Length: 219
Image 1: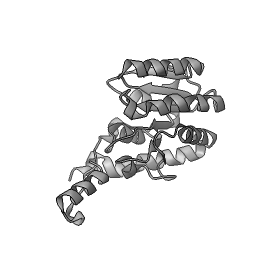
Image 2: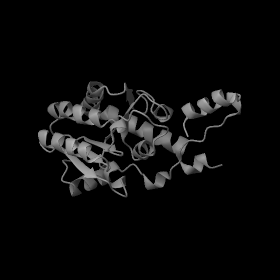
Image 3: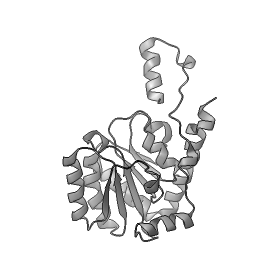
């Protein structure tokens, strides 16, 4: 669970917060490795992606609360600044929102790929540099820690469990809910500063291993 939920249980139950231990959502980080530069280039070649292009990944259910409007509105701004960048939207959900995403992809020269639902998202995490996650409500999201373990720099809303692992300017960035311009500007910033994006991604990977890997969560 998340620290926010732990605090809520403590306050509602009248329990001393010092007696509450929060166990984070765990994962097997071996299943979500951060690829070497060489292996990432090979993975991108399979999808026809230029090795120098910055790749953004969104992976979640396609429903309004996951911030789909932010994705739809922010990507055209990013595409204008970085026409070579690519966005992969992974997940199934509401057809009207999927259609909206597909229309946005067409309007941005097919720079966005609407993948749909997949069983194993690792293939898409391994393509990416940036994880776009503008969800409005979360505990500690599974896809977020999977992406961070895979070496992506996250950009999330300042909510719930995201705050447990996303530390501004250390392991990623948090932006206000529904502020698509802030998300767009942050993506552009990371694309303009690839060395900074790499620094944050390495920190994100290390934090998730220390905080969420089964070897550290299960005592």
